[in-house]
Length: 453
Image 1 (cartoon, rainbow, N blue to C red):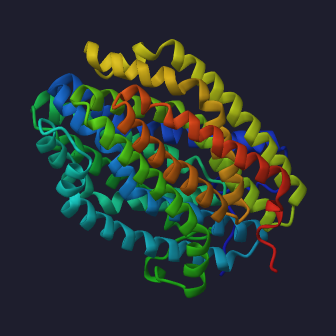
Image 2: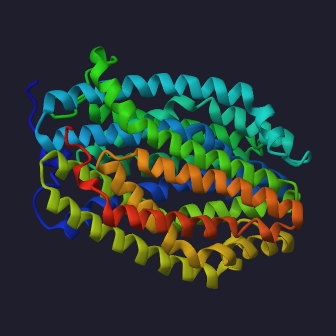
């Protein structure tokens, strides 16, 4: 494959200042994720203000279930990004080409499966989550329309992971800004002007995501670059499928585990009524925004490490890991303190009812000061993914964030049946996982993750 490496379309992270490169890569991702969060948050804000608390609960209560159903495919995209980054760092552009086309083929298959699962299993899953009967009809309505857009939802993540893998974090940002603004405009038109139901918010999101995918493919199909896509060559390459599964399956399972346990947690919260549901949903939206800088740097960590290990620069990979972890922890703790102080104001942005403010502030003040340890766990997990050790965070998070959380909640709810005992499950498990990750980071051979044995 003959392809030039255009500077405007990639960033070689194997040379130059570590802080400058990682920060420069993370900032566009931060802005991209900001606009990504704007999708659902715009839905939540406009729905809450125009259609009321029931509609807000229907939209916000969908967050964990949406994450559960999409997380496996998103995790697989992370694994594919690691494969592409590694070959890009090694200068093996033929393998980059095969990995890109295989990744797109897998994404199309995943999008079809997600649509079928989301549309047909929605009522069953929402009832399993003990969704308030007052909220259930609108929640089912929102979900089904949302998952009709399953293919563009997955394909945007596929395109973003391909671009990020070669250091291009700016192009996805530009496309996402356009589609996010479109989403907000459509929300206003559908809900505030035409007064359509809650389903219209999901339709607005689907249309906006489709536009972002179209823009991504226009960029990716341009000829003459390392990751140029030829539509006729989109297929499954056996070796690349096995590598993407090897590095992506653990991340997919890890995300699914987190999504599954969060659904269980939310099912307990849902049992306390629609105000608790709305508060929990608002908190999740706020926390999603709060963790954008940390998520951006964890993506930078994975890409930086995989490129440098692909090029054989192990000491440089270690420097990138140290810098990324320090930044993640410091940013998270500052954000946590701000959220702790202004919790009621942030929750009130979505719903100002006293009951929602009460539950929302309680959860925020229980968890926000522990964001530093959460960031450390995510940071080391990113180090592991970038070095080909994705199985490690999967194992830690399955045992602590899933099994331990379920045991904890089951016990405390049987003993107290008080919502205030649910919220501490998060900081408790963050602390335990961070201790395990610290031991692994300090004493393991993660830097040799790609070495052939």
